Each structure stands twice: as structure tokens, then as C-alpha cells.
Image (cartoon, rainbow, N blue to C red; front, side):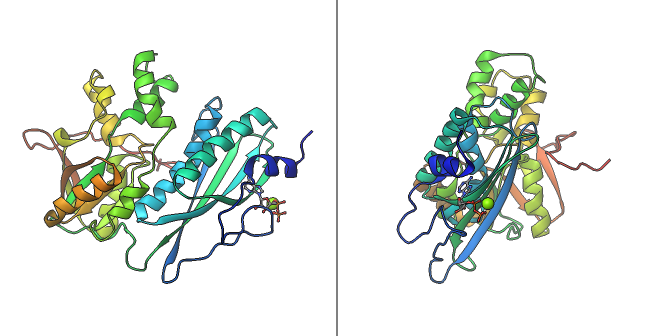
Length: 321
Ligand code: ADP
Ligand code: MG
């Protein structure tokens, strides 16, 4: 029977890059690049709430880190390293090996080594907590409060696929194997837009990553910036897999669907070329979907310029009664 320390050694202790002290001591140590600030963020993932109990553990390891890297991306911060807290209801080494592989593979892609953590037994469900550390120069972070009237609103990647995959797996939509196989990767293997976030420093005025739904997350930028926005529904980059979907479901997925992990950002209209160049450099797609206005509120306009009604709400863990 493997002990807690065997498990850590086997699955989580990877050689840290030169200059970092990784797993094995009371604390990890990493240098902060001279003149830069540390950007840090934590996300907690709970079985049954953030993932299905039978999800592929390699995908889960990937996603646990991806959702955190997405926060660094939205801030325009360069990853330094991460720590992992695990509460495990049972000891399943095949599961752990796959989880660790998914986690370490993504960490390697983004130069974000696992440098510490904590491992305990859980009386109930599986819980995963990841904290990331990144670096960004003072004044360069992409905050939520910088949007100004006249800015374009942009979104990276495509919208809607993760929401549809989630509702299929959750049984809210009738089984549709073809639709599930076309959307599942978006839900289970999100690709954090770290390179895009870095390339948007000095270009974007404000940014957020779309985790709870486009309208809700853009709403955070609007509130922090004291502005409003008009979006154009026909311009939305809808995932191709949603082409045959009922229009109301498609709209809910595009405007309200969570788990997207793309960036929504604003930039002055004079910087359109710079935004497209940043996206090109990052190998990302960027689509202009609307405009920031002075008047508070958020309207989504149809092809005739009429506001859509009954807009979807995003995800809220503690919705008001
Ligand atoms: P402590 O008793 O000081 O909390 P632990 O015995 O919990 O230390 O952990 C031993 C070492 O293993 C520490 O360096 C810790 O950061 C690391 N560690 C424990 N669990 C994990 C994990 N899930 N992922 C990465 N490192 C871990
Ligand atoms: Mg400990």
C-alpha cells in the first residue's frame, strides 16, 4: 500500500527547473523577475459540481490547471509555477497516474511547473484546488476596469460548444452521440489563451476569461469600468458543431454558456490591426462582437439592430432567491 509520501513522489514530484525549489520541502521557492509583480489565482473544482465523477482523469488533470492558466491569460501574466491541493476519497493509482499526466503535460506546454501542494484523504467527494503564480510588469496587467466608451468588444476562439456538451452529458438534452463527439473536447480539454493574453498587453484596455458565460463575464468588465455595451448576435463566433441546433438552445449556449476559457476583451477601435496581429502571433482567432458605450447596461442586437429579449443568465453558485 502506497503512503501519502510515495504517492507524492510518484505522481507529483517532477524535477523543478533551475532556480526553483519544487516539491519536497516545507515551501516551494521561486524568484520573481526583477521589476515585475506576482499574479496569483486559485480555482476549486468539486466532483459533481465542476466535473462528472466518471470524467477521464487525464482530461480532469488538464482542466484543473487549464482553468487557472486561463486566469493568468486574462490578466496578461506569464506563468511561473503552480501548486495543487488534492482531497482524494479513495486511492486509485491508475486514476492518479492519468490525472497527473494530464496536469503535467499542460504544465509543460505553458512552462508552469508543479512546485508544491497538499494531499489528503477526503471523507466524501473528490476536491481539487490549484493555485497558479505568474509575472507581469506593474501597470501592464489586463484589468477588468479599463474599458472605455467607443472600445470594440472582442472574443477569442469560438462560443457555445462546451455548454452543449455539458447539457448532453448531464441528460438535459437527449442523447446525440454525433453532437457530443463534436463538442466534448471544448468542455473537457479547454485551451487557455495564455499567449493571446501576453500579446494583448499594451493593446487591450480590459480583459476577462469566459468561465460563467459571455454576458455575465462581460458584465463584470462593464461594472468594473462603469460603462455599458452593445453586442451584435450575428457576429458571434459560434462553434460549427452548433449549426443544426435549435436556435434558442444555440443562443443560450453562445451568450450564456460557461466553461469557454476564451478571452473577452476591449480595445480602442484605432487598435484593430494590433488586435489581429496579437491574435495571429498567438495562433488564436479574435472576433469583434460589439462596442462599449457610455450608458450602463448590455444589449444584444439582431441582424436588424433590434435588441434580443430574454437573455440568458450565466452561472452563479449562490443565485439570489
Ligand atoms: P507539509 O507537512 O509541510 O504540509 P507535506 O508532507 O504535505 O508537507 O508535503 C510534502 C511535500 O510534497 C511538500 O513539498 C508539498 O508541497 C508536496 N506536495 C504534497 N502534495 C502535493 C501535490 N498534490 N502536488 C504537488 N506537491 C505536493
Ligand atoms: Mg501537507
